[in-house]
Amino acid sequence: MSERGPGAGAVCAVVAAALLWSSSYAVTKQVLEDVGPLSIGAVRFTLAALLLGVMVRMSRHRPVRPDAPQRRQLYLSGFLGITVYFILENVGVDLSTASDASLIVATYPLMTMLLERVLFRTRMPPLRVTGVLLATVGAFLVVRNGAQVGGSSRWAGDILLLLGGLTWAGYNVLGKRASTGQNAMSVTYYQTLAGAAGFLLASLVEAGDWRMPGLTASSLLVYLAVACSVGGFLLYNYGLRRMASSVAVNILNLVPVFGVLGAVVINGESIRLAQVAGGAIIIAGVALGMIEREQKVMVKPEAGEAGLSGAATARAGAAAGPAPNGPGAVVSTVREPGDEAR
Image 1 (cartoon, rainbow, N blue to C red):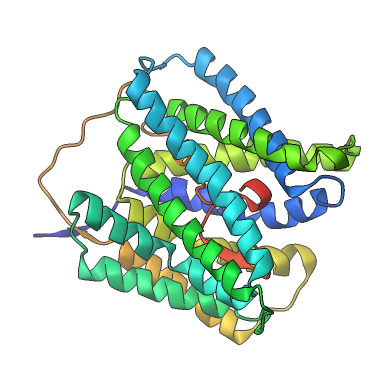
Image 2: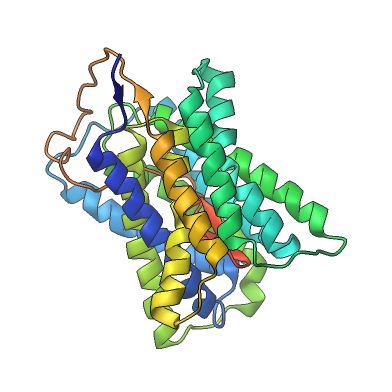
């Protein structure tokens, strides 16, 4: 049998999502000066849900509204991948060390692959496993220059990060399964609704510190909502629905690579030889993980996607794609698919 991987459009969509999510590090860091982390998530995903709602209603290729069981699955995946994942990730990164976080987050593709195996008896191709392990090593090399020691809270942080990985894996597997008959925009809309609702409730913890953000912070919040939440999750969902969940999550290991490149180009930071080597290893691991044995299965276009199949616009809703910021890796002490809300 011949070797093949996911379609170029799907791969480009997930890579573009990783690029957008990698930019959220610096943006979120600036917004944190005016707004709390949970409040950032609430504002960001509420704005994203409103925008997606308008887009869904204006779409010419609007699919049939999902029935109640499917909506519940979409809402659950969104709550897991957006609200729960990003809270666990950000608190875990804060309590743990950068080196621990980078290594644990880089194992998320393997967790996703194992969950697929347990739930659906999905096979684990040796090439994909090797690619995931390579990308894990590369991600560790890219971000290992963070803190090497931690206090008494280190293990608590590590446990939260591991739970975040299971949550992100659940988001990917459940979201992919719940998207049947829906296009990427519809899936992302329902997931973002649930994620926004979860963050709105969680943000009440910070109610005593609420204040009107300045013009700069407000503009950056809009960027997080439009580019990172709407754009990133649409692109990720588009790619996710056309490849194995573990392959999509593995591609997100490119997030730290883009993060380092951005720091070099925009901030003029220096880059270490180990980071260059790590970036090369990640790219090799991602490429290797996308090789799959060809199977004689015809994939029919999903409802409402006939006019979108050629465009790179679309999966992740619940997680984030930790966000995540999108889930994939950690730069310094913060990681995205979402920072305070990928």
